[in-house]
Length: 233
Image (cartoon, rainbow, N blue to C red; front, top):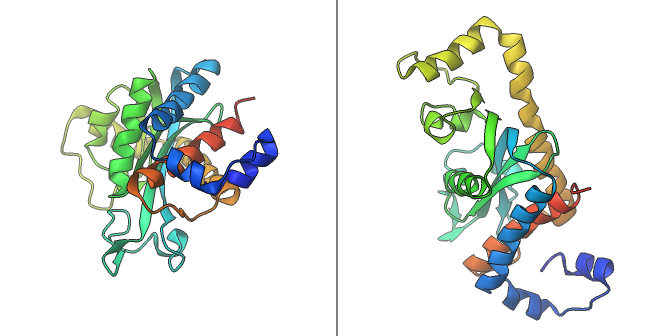
C-alpha cells in the first residue's frame, strides 16, 4: 500500500489506501502475485541459470534500520525484538545473473533462513535449475549441498571449515584453494544481489508499514514483483 501513489501515476486508477490494505489479506491476491513471478520468468525464457542469492531485512518500526544492525548477533535469526515486538521482516531472493531478475523469492517474519527456504521452494516450483550459485558466509556450510546438489557452489569457507564431509564439499574447498582468483571472480558476482536489494529499497522504501502478518508478507512479495517489472524488458 505504500506504493499506492506510484500505482496511481502508472495506471490512472485512484484507489483508497484501505481498499489496498484489505486486498493484501486476500489469499487469491497472494496467489496471483506468486503467479506473476512465474509468468515473468516464463516470458523471459529463464530455466537453467547462474544464480546469486542474498537476504535482507525490512524494518517494522521507524526506530531501527536494518542496515545499521544487520551485523549484530541474532538479527538474521529474528531474535531481535523491542518490547516483545519483532523489529524486522525478512526477504531472500535468488537472482538470475543474466537478466537481473528474481527467479526465487521468499519472505518470513521469523528469520532470513526461513525466507531462504521459501525462495528455494518458489524457484523449484517454477522449474528453475541452477548451474551455479553464490551465497554469503551465513550459508557457508555443508547443508548447502542438499539445497543445490547439481550446481557449482561458490561460498567463502568459514574459519573453522574442515575437509570432513562428502566429496562435493571437498571439491568446493579445493577449487577455492587452487584457483582463488578465478573463484573469487565468480563469487563476487554475488554483489549483484546486494545491489538489487539496495535498488529495491530506494524504490519501495526500507520500512514495512503493514501490521498484520499476511499483509507484511504480501507487501514484501510486491517489492520483488516491482524489481522484476523494472527488468522484464
